[in-house]
Image (cartoon, rainbow, N blue to C red; front, side):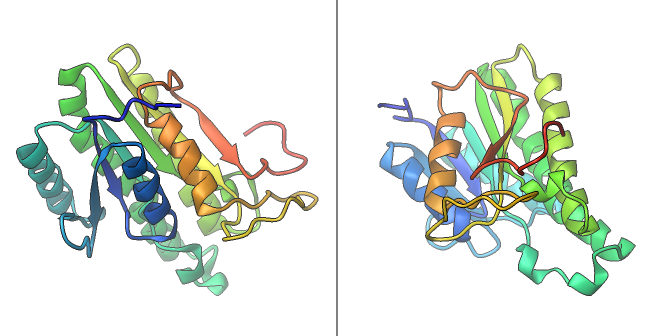
Amino acid sequence: MDLGFEGRVVVVAGGRGYIGRAVVDRLRAEGAVVVVASREPGEGGVALDLVDPASVDAAVRRVLDEHGRIDGLVVTAAPSARTLDPAKNSDPEQILTALDAKALGFLRLAAAVTPAMREAGYGRIVGVSGQNAYLTGNTTGAVRNAALVIVAKNLADELAGTGVAVNTVNPGPVVDDPSARVPEHGPGESSPQQIADLVAFLVSPLSAVSGEAVAIGHRVRGVTAF
């Protein structure tokens, strides 16, 4: 199925990460012009630090100067959960740092690209959150992921009727070879490629979805509402 990416420019923040690389490969295979945005973007990419507003603005200006448009934005950039100190799950400083890097970083970048999208009357924005948003027991993980979902829903509603759609994708554990087993009171696994397939649809012109938080790899067993 042709997802309609020919001639479309998509920025992938965190495009050199575990999930981001799969998203970049999938979108390029669909014919999109993909710009990798990262602290170390590599050749052809743009430097980006999501916690630095000046860096965010400079990255967006560069993409618009070089390509003249931004049709899609995918934000996979955030410190890995493995970099968080389990002994500080409820530490306010760690929570604030994680919130800034993930949810507010998403908001900074989304806010920077939406003026061009509004002007064009078209845009697709997808943030990668996580199913920790649905779980207790890890305050840092729950807050940073739930906040991203809430930010994205608010932004989607703000942009309703403009042609710009905003969604989040919420994986559980991400592994190369996901198991079909889903634990009690836990989420199922998914691979970077499976996540990339879902992201590619949501960021494509074929998608009419907006304001949704879509779980992948099976939404937490036993949970019926966010």
